[in-house]
Amino acid sequence: MENRTDIYVDTGSVGILTDSGSLQAVALGSCVAVTAFDPALSAAGMAHVMLPGTCPDPDAPHRTRYAADALEALLNRLRELGTDPADLDICLVGGANVLEPDHPGPGPAILDSIQSLLKARNLSPAVVEGGGTQRRSCTLRLPGGVVSCTAGDASPRILRAGHDVRQSDRRVP
Image 1 (cartoon, one colour):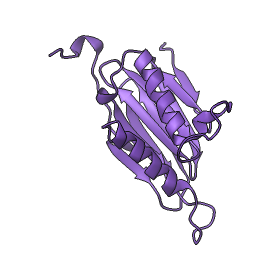
Image 2 (cartoon, one colour; image 1 turned 30 degrees about the vertical axis):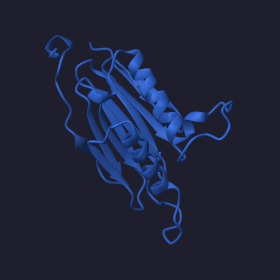
Image 3 (tube, one colour; image 1 turned 135 degrees about the vertical axis):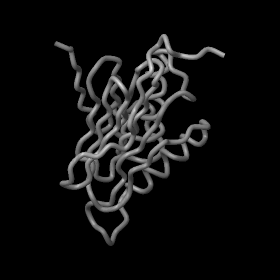
C-alpha cells in the first residue's frame, strides 16, 4: 500500500510536499491559495494567503498571512529542496468577494498583490481561478502536480492536469 501525506494548509500557512499525497486549502473566500509545483523534482508547495502586501511588523508570528511574506516563504522552502523558481508551475485560486457583493472585499487586492510580486520575480501563474462571489477550495496532488478546485457547492474540476516527469528525466543543457 502506498503511503500518502495529506496536508491541510490553514489560513496564513505554507505547506510543502515531496511524497505522494495532497496539499489542500479549503474555505477560500477572499483568501488566495498559491500552488507551486516543480515537475522535475516532484516537489510542491502551497501558501494560503489572507492579506495583500507585506506584514507591517517584521517580528509578527503569522507574517505568512500577507502575500509578500507568504510568497517569499513558499519560494524559499522550495529552493531548499533544490527547485529553481523559473521551473515552477504556479496556480492561483481564490480572491472572491463572498461577504458583501456591493462592497469590495480584499480578494481582488490579494490577487493583484500576488500577481505583482510574481511579475517582479519574472514569474507568472499558469492558471488564475479567482474573483467572483463564490468560495473555493484548492487541492494540489502528488505525484503529477494535478491542481483542482471547487467553486461554491460544485464538484471539483481540474485546473492544471499536471506532469509525469521523474528526476532522471530532467534535461541538463
